[in-house]
Amino acid sequence: MKHLDTYHYEEVIKDPFVTKKLKALLKDEYQHLETNLTVHAPIGLSSDCLVLGGLAPHKGGQEEARLYVCLTQGDIHAAIYTNHRVRVYSKVERYSHLPYDLRVWVDHVAWRQQSPLMSGKPDFVDMDDFETEK
Image 1 (tube, rainbow, N blue to C red):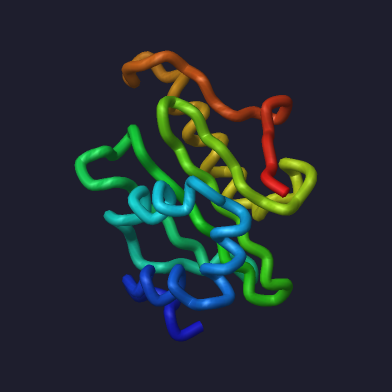
Image 2 (cartoon, one colour):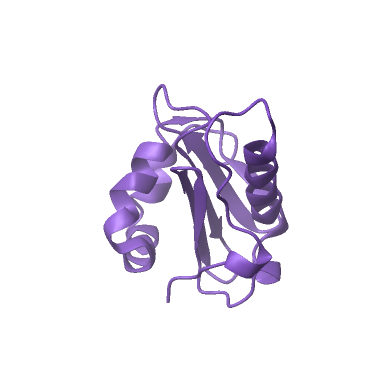
């Protein structure tokens, strides 16, 4: 828990356990996640998961990401928002099994895309379009 309320994203992401799991889960999207976490808030906690969230420099609303590192089970869940789509990377098989706060973020991005205030075409993950990487 030493990273809670800090900006030590690199220490969390570069932890050997986390890096190994992230690279296996994200494959070619690993660097994309890192880029989309460049501008970030302090590391939070949701249930037993460290929560890292951010966006690419000068790309707010276009390139964003969330990373959940769950301490009890060692699970990792990531989501990348790009090109008006959210792609979720997780070993869980159902959207409802993702951490609650991650589902709220995905739903928020989906809502934001439907708003007439946002430019671009709405194209987002929903319950029927949920994809996991195994």
